[in-house]
Length: 208
Image 1 (cartoon, rainbow, N blue to C red):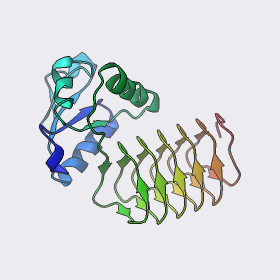
Image 2 (spheres, rainbow, N blue to C red):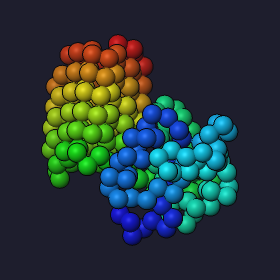
Image 3 (cartoon, rainbow, N blue to C red):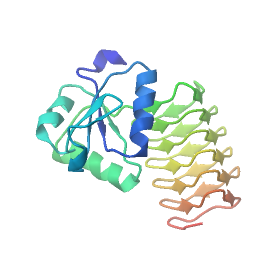
Image 4 (cartoon, one colour):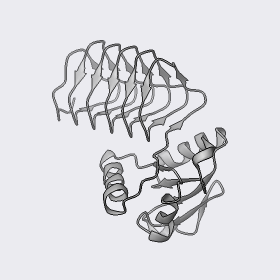
């Protein structure tokens, strides 16, 4: 993985995911060049020895992404992550690679598909024939059973269990400790409360 990194990874955003991503990259012996964050009070400070360089639209640092430095979007809010990605790819026309943060304690079978820019926390278990899209967050201890499909921009809270042959559409948020029973489809932008047990399909945009 290091062979395509010029300066190191650039992390966008300062929130609870940032420290988790830093820990994962460091455990995997990957270099983090710095963090870009729009709140000025954090500029020129450090987190775990990694500098907060400046704003997310600072051209001086965005230049690094034109030099093959991969990036990671640490915003927990999917709307912020999407906004940041749209800015990078459409406005700034960045062509760098979005890197995934995968904790070394996660169990991931070879017979699965994993997209770009995902966060896979500690003790996550992904079974065979699972498909995960891009820019999705699986917090610590999430279990995903076989033949389940998770689309882009999904967030699944710690300790949740996703049954087999489940389909989770884009921009779904699932609270910690939730259980999604086998065969269920959760529609786009739906929200599942913490500790909920979902036994039937959920329509798009529904808050359960």
